Length: 493
Image (cartoon, rainbow, N blue to C red):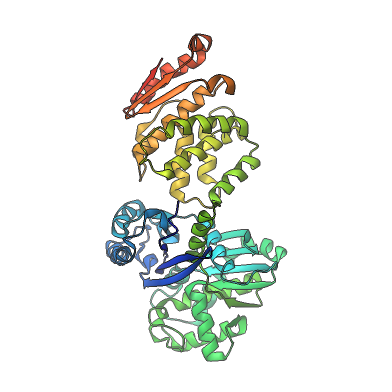
């Protein structure tokens, strides 16, 4: 639970810039008291094999050490840090995250593209006056651009497309030279990336278009200072801005009122992405918002304080979509959490939630086939869009579901980047709960007494219970062998 007497920190490790917002809760709303931004340009550190360079990693770590100094006294639950497109793509992101978390002093989660889009929308929606109109929100980052249509605080359509101000500048203006032909080629590339969503987005429609994050805010500022546009972006002014870049001839020669020195080297890529969006989505005009992904993170934390966890909404949606037997999953959760709650009080609350979600979703794979359904369950959870869940959380949850029965493959657990020991224990508790509730007979299983201490798990059954339940007895005998692989001893009396 978030400590409401302390500050909150939201950190966005973007492909162009790292941002940190520090806020306090006032009247159930975040009041920003500090912001820090550093242009790291992480996407520029990826080579043609998507390996992040040592030099760029060290630059990023130095930034995170400075961020960490500012928030070192905050409790872990009051800090949310996420990585986006570049860390999704980097082949060595796991190794980098290990060092990055040490530098920052807090966990960092990599979010999937649509989860990034959801967070962006929440940040924008809460920064604007409420309305029932449909809004198109576009967020141009360094490595990806998010496109969302939503109403009020609810996103309806979300996509993240791999084009941003850094990677488009690097791709189409490698040597820094700007020509009209290169700009048109970049715009065409952007339109091709958008064509698979454009028909659906245009058919749905929107009443206003909103842009967020640094690129669009910078473009809006440049247009205001050069064309007196009063913060409104339209295609004619974008074309005029592109022409000015052609006249400059090189990214190093672009000098315009409203354009900062650190943004200038990659602004042409952002202009091309935005022009592609205007053309392909037939956007008439756009205004910039102060809200972005980091404000979306703050909103999620505020919602948590209010007792609303977006992840629980996601789990409920999956239960409904896949017609899960909620009575059976309820029995599994009750038994598994009953065992978990006997553990040392220092156990991570996040692991308890993971066990709860695994219990509720463990049979989701039955929607594909009863044969090998644990693997199907793991696959669905790993591959689904799950608002509120990071990629690592989905992978960990998926592994728990894959190993809910059969061989306890410790090599798969040990490969987890974080807390493999705690995850192994969670999997064991889930497996035992599934065995005890196999008959789907609540009146029977509830009379089993469970005692768990250190590495010993003791199950005490009523007299003649095991004699009358030979299948349960056989399952537990086999499970004792599997549990021993993780260093636990399962005893049955």
